[in-house]
Image (cartoon, rainbow, N blue to C red; front, top):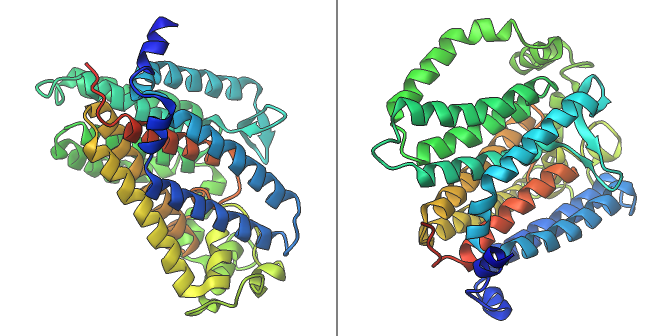
Length: 374
């Protein structure tokens, strides 16, 4: 208790409010408001289940983000390994007693929230590796032991996530982890060698994929091979985005969505509906908003006085960039469908919770930017 108080005694409440990054905060509020409006559109212009649920989660998780931001960054450094371990235990719980839907066992029913622990691991892996590389001296970063430990930190949760099965989330977790390893100072040659080895082993990896995962790859290569089946979603997505044109059809006027041509429009394909209604101009504005958010996170990392905060901020910024890139590439047919939500915009409590926790820790780094960690 004494240590907890000491970690939070450097500033009073009003000083912490003053030190918040209000540009980032404003951008998150704008993005959240846009997500509510577009979710309202997915419900056919009525305040139905998805809109109500999305709004309630946004309010609750936004408040949680603010609470998290007031904790000293030392607290998150202190708890990083514990939080990583707790998420590992949740993944084990999912593998034993998780809720099974459509052949996948990925969720824990908490009654007030159906939690997907693999989404939390996207943040947990960045926290854990940020703390690890904060402790590793620059001379030992490229040692066999150091690289082996960091890879083990990534591989352990991936084994559980792949068993669910959830290849898309696994790829995003691995990407987030590798980003922090790279930022930690590991030489680029190791990544090049690993990438070449991955390409060589790719034909063997594909043989171990689930049938539906192989089908997604084939559909990506040729969506017209099954236009009414596996290729239907991506074909309709392209039609909807293209029909939005330069300025869009207008709010609540998306015909592809309202005539139910577009399945899953409230989750991974939320950008499709947004682009149809607001067109190229609206899509460009949304990407600009995301760009400002990413740049602000990087700016916060650059002014932080400790490497843990810098590594987390830079890692989280790159991770957000990857999530957005993968989602947009997916709905545009540039990548296979892997189940990657668009941060804040897509419906889904676990994804939103993880993202808001990440924003909260970034805000904590900003509020305590002058804090050093031994």
